[in-house]
Length: 537
Image (cartoon, rainbow, N blue to C red):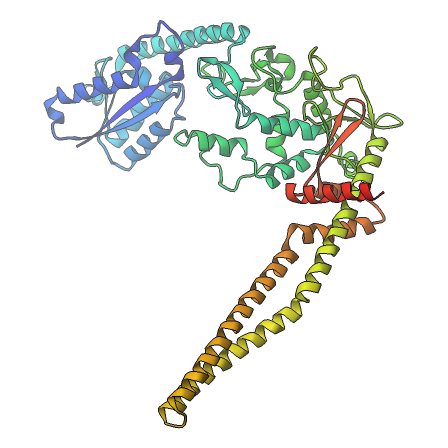
């Protein structure tokens, strides 16, 4: 005979401070094993446990419970034991189905230890009025405890305590206070980036593409990495990426303004057969509960961007400095105002701070920034092309073309083979007595000296070829080709600027700093040439 022990702990069992500890998983397990050990009829029986931790008893949607019932239908066990009826089911109708129809049909013996119930005592009959009354009591108890839990949760919510089991993406629970959120250093920059991209006119699809291109982890993948043993997001594919859905979810979370948001949904419960989604007017919003990642104005602006039509998104693609202009003080994206006759940029990130260094009161005209950026970029790319040509000219003079070098290398390899063949022939002639020992030694030494010279020349040519091939694949060569295309282009586009420029930082007084995508070494070379050009003038 095989015995199944069913153990369940609801999340509500730990929510009330006065709740007895006797319902804990450990205590239920101990009670059930003691019961089995104290009954000789169960000696030698195989015992298997099914545990649902954090699941309500109001329905059958419990992983271990469903697995146990499926196994019982296959005839894997003959006895089910639990602590009391409430651990098995809170709903009398559901329990009655199992006690009076399902278990008798399957030939399962059901025992509820604390209720003193053993289905073997009721063979051929129902559990009687005693079982019915117990279940009525459990049903009333469940509703009463549910109301008390909700009242307790309402008090915590109104006090601004974070009551959900997991922090929103971008935050983590304070290790010193589990009901308080603090920014997660790994994910809060991603949230900030998403809002920055939205505020600069990017559509949700464009934001998703940027995040995927730059290799940022999605919320579900990050959760699985941080909590590998947790079943949440367990079906998430390793290839799961950013899309318009998860970007919209981030942009729609008002919690990033520093507020706690409750009652977005009314979860399924005893008195509520299905989960209901509440309108925003029904939300409970408690401001200033934790450190904000964005301002409320930025949140509202992002919602406007998200709701824009596709035709508006097409217009944004022609926006020359898109995703490039940042505040030099705080580093955040500047807000572009395209409604004015002369579109401009402004830093709104720190306008509510009195000690900010951001130029919050200044407006920077787009056309002026474009003129400076394009002029500086043209100058930098002209220097880049000139430097590339200078390097290539010097290389061709000292080493010749790549084709000539390759031909010389092949001729050297042929000469080396002929040298080795001559040495072998010389030895054979000496062995056959065609030449004397002294003649052989003289020929051997001469060929050895010649071979050493050929090997040295081969090594030198090999290095020259490798250097020339590396130069053709180098940053200078790659950027130089793109620079030539840019300088010849009739029209400049945002992708062209973004290829060479990482960011354009604007400081108070219209001071502009351009951060190029060149290596520090190349920038240093080009800056030196700029200084030399100025000195010559």
